[in-house]
Amino acid sequence: MIRRLSLVLSGRTSLRATFSDTFHPTLRTPPQRARRHYVTKESTNWAEELRPIFRGLEQSTRKVFLLTLNKSWMGNTVGLYLRNSQGPENEWIRDLARKRFQTNCNTWKSRTMYSLKAHVLKLERDSPVMFGREKDIRNLQDFLNKSFNPDTFEVLFVFCRGWITIAGSDIRVRRWCLYIYVELCMTIKRHLMWKRDIASGVPTDTRTMDWRWCLMRFSKIRHAEQSQHYVVDDITLVKSVKRSELPRSSMEKEDFLDFDEDEFAFRPRDRDFETHSMILPSTNQGNASGEGAQDSDDAIPDVAGMQ
Image (cartoon, rainbow, N blue to C red):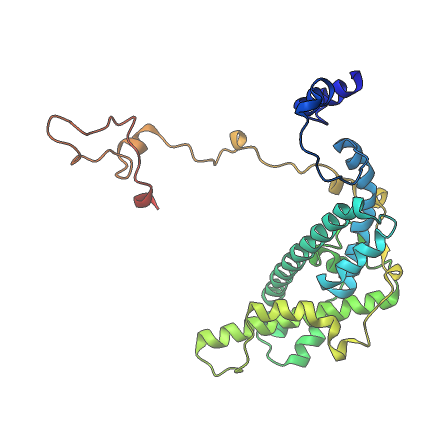
């Protein structure tokens, strides 16, 4: 009885079930379907146990994503990494891991493509003749080939930053990185050229090269026939960054400018409110005696008119 009361106080069973089973056998609840027995754990204990597992899994998924650029591989990666966590009681762990890292892949893809787009625009500004106004595809590819740098690659491909070292990886990995850097930058360059041709009214390629086309090329680059010569299947060739080797500045909390310390934060003066036509109460509401009108302090602003 004492043990059951302790379970009640800990929230693991209901008060009604405890007392009806103990004191009122005739009022027992109808028999329920037997449930599989699970060993309960506190959420903090689960978090402590899962942290190193998910940490190692995140390292592996970043390497796999670098070599595939496609989230469809994440299911096999999670299943292989969590092969020791079998059984129905661990299904929620596997499901959580699959959803988490497939979502991560979508984020990595989007951020990487926007990062590459900003990089291509910067190259156009810095080299207006050799890259900005150049139209020949081979010349553009040669320019990007010479512009490749492992450190820059880790910044542009955001999922590598602080996790993967390209310079320390195998030469086959570096060749793959050079290949996808040139190919994806050229994809974005052709997308920009296509948009400019349409804006200027110049006859252009009839095939669509919008942003969806760029995202599709990102996901399908590994499966292209011409890519097979550069494809790498062994993730052990990709080297990780030791956390102790990270620059100290990248491990410290970023120093954001506080609102109260910002001298350029907007601080309206009283007369700004007194003369603003969208804030002053309407003069045609109610009758002359003021019936139906609201005080200025209680007036509801016209949100639709302010937009």
